[in-house]
Image 1 (tube, rainbow, N blue to C red):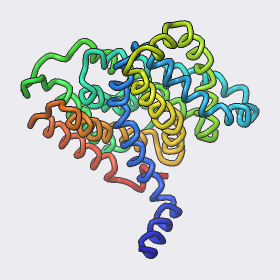
Image 2 (image 1 turned 180 degrees about the vertical axis):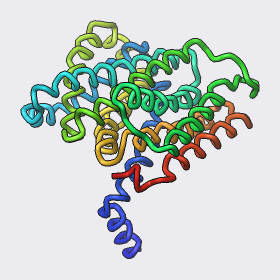
Image 3 (image 1 turned 90 degrees about the vertical axis):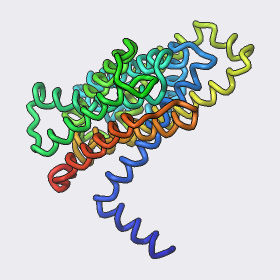
Length: 307
């Protein structure tokens, strides 16, 4: 056992183990977020669940706000504001609204669109040069996501629920935030980026939350404690800790390697969906196979992707 631990530590310290460890950990955390959102919506409205999630994350990261504010150059602050709104607040709201009509597993599957948008933004706006295998991998993974999003409740192809457009918009927001971090904040500490981004939206979220009937619902709804617990877990792990880990992953690898996490998220989301009784069919497995194939191609030239 001791030899295994030593090998593991050596693997992580080598610099090549850390990206894969972060990738798997984030996949588990964010893949579980969709079922937690579903739990939060049992007692609270989508807007309340979003504000509660952001507020909890903000409070959790508050000690780091004061510590790191002066470390951020003034010219970088505008990007922090955008990341706070576009990379955190809006996606959280869109996912909550979407899950009022979509299964949590389907929402998680659609999240795989992020790498495609990240690619388009990086290439056409930031003039990023990518490897051929990265393009192939992202396209294959995107095809798998499309298949998954079109499978209906009978296991055949059907139309996409209009609420799926909210998830698509959320993934576009994530892609914008991802590129901003990679291009403009690569030298800024992950904790600094995360804490200050939450500081831009946390106070407003708290003000909004307590302006609603949140207290009344919390005191009278029998499911409120269950929903509140889910939002606490989601706020701390899925939002606060997740942002730190994801920022670190972007800064130590590349925007596209970090985007692979969105290929892994649907697998975890489907797992939780099965536990909660959501149906899965052969076409779902076909879509997941394409996603995993895309992951393989994106990482085929690992030395060129991981710094």
